[in-house]
Amino acid sequence: MINFLKSNKKLSLEIFLLCLIIGIGVYFRLQGLIKNNLWYDEIASYSVAVQAFPFGIIEKLAEFDTHAPFYYFILHFWIKLFGNNELALRFLSVLFGVLCIAAVYFLGKKFFSAKAGLIAAALLSVNSMQIYYSQEIRFYTYVSFLSIISIYFFLNLLKNANHKNYAFFLLASLFFLYSSNFAQFIVFIESLILLTVFLYRKNFSEVKRLFGYLFLCFIFYIPHLFLLFSQVKNFSGGFLTGFINENVLLLIGFQFLNLIIPFYNVSPVFFEACLKLQKLLPEIAFFIVLPLIIFVIAAFKALKENKTAVILALFSILFFLMEIILALNGKMPVIYKYAIFISPIVLLVWAYGISVFQKKVLTGFFLAGSLGIYLYYLIFTPFAPMYIPRGYFVKKTAIVLKKLDFTEKDFILPLPEGGCFFKDFYSSFYGINSRGFDFSLQKQLSLKNYENLKFLGSKEFVSSLNEKNSNEKLLSFLKRPFPAEEFNDFVKEKFLDKIPSGSRIAVYFPKDLVYSRKRLNNYVKKPILREKEHNSRLTLNRSHLNVLFTSRFVYNFIEICDKNLNLVNSIENSSLKIYIYEK
Image (tube, rainbow, N blue to C red; front, side, top):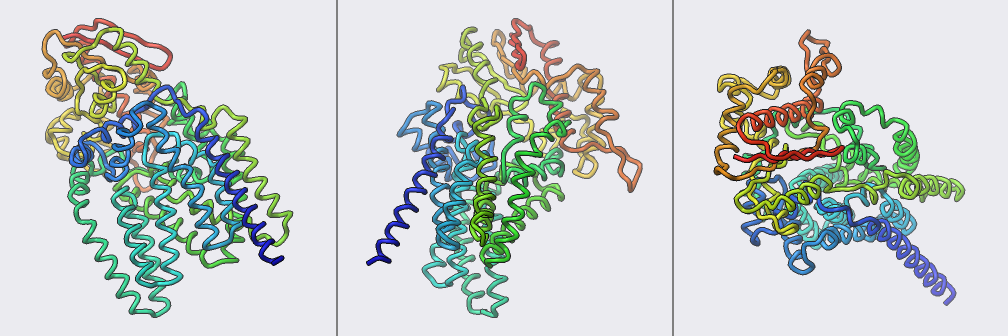
């Protein structure tokens, strides 16, 4: 009876602490949820989700995006139920963000201890990266939640390889694969670890059964491959995407705090922020390096105590390595926000390490240090994710266009993103039914054929480009003192010739993206050119090339508009330029 009462009291305390942790997580995710409208990625999510279910959504993804459809299916019906206002749209991500807190607790309790689960939930509830993406109309907290579910059934299968656990693992894998094209990494790593463990145990019957279930998974995955192949064809990588630079550090740093995000989103000088990462060092030292030190100590302790912790650590390392190897081979960029796929796993290893220190003083010290830094960042710094504005440029432009009475005969072109996602948004949120252009500079560079790259130069020049020589050859595009004839023809054919006489076109962009010709050319020269040791050729860091190339494209585009259209109005403030042209 006494043991029952103690057990019941312990469970009640556990439930109370979990509810408290979830409550704190909800508070931070709801605080500042209204961000002054949507920014580009959120507009993309909205534009895809409001298409006809299911084939309209799939068609939009095939043509203009690189992601799997299930999140957009869910968002589609969420909009039908709760409307398309900013609060309702973002609340779906809040919901998945809160589910992540509960899910990581149950994962930790199942495979480690209730104490480890509670600490992991506490870390995740105040983790800035998780909070940031819980306030964005994107799939990141959704896939973070699915990654926890997938890992749960993966570990279950390692523990007990029966048909029931295989079936759940299969279902979790399929749902994950249909929700994110990046989930292929997760499922591959899980399958690789399962295969390795079964071979190590010399359990060849399990190896055979594993391959049987993986084959079944592939059969059910075939319908999605049609969409995936279309996306690969439309977005095959490109000349400016396969780079390795500071983003590798961000990929790791984002496990602890998303300190870098505010500087890229609200920096008054975007260009310099991209080129001079060192200006962030004082903040990095406290908010990333210190938690990283605590994590390393805790992770070392966890790896000594538990084999499951070793498996989760191996899982995380393999995930990082796969992304970096693909980036080194030019297949994809290092996308640091995709760290959210394994963020709960990293935090769980961290939490378990803290929970198993033999001295309670050490556990308390490391837990207080970890949570203290997180909470200090959230409460006392101006860079906390709840306070980061979004959608500034889009909303400002919409207000201007509304005053100027833009109608169905007019056009809107945001540079450099293009207009493929904006029409539905402007129409739904502001009643502006102007037309847009299905254009994306990233997509143009990904297709790698002359029709899409003719603005770079002659057909011979474009056909000679490849990922190895693009750095050197694209410098010629950056160094041009004025738009080439090919660029002029491209802009006329793609945009200007499609505008009827009497129509207006609004071209807008962040002001700090376009620099004077002199300043741009200065950046092309010494500061970001570096000499490779194995030869004497000068090359450009790809992250710098990306920024410079985009800036040059926009600059040249505006020059051609000035020559071929009538500029009837221009509006600018400290961070935005809007040009209104009439044909």
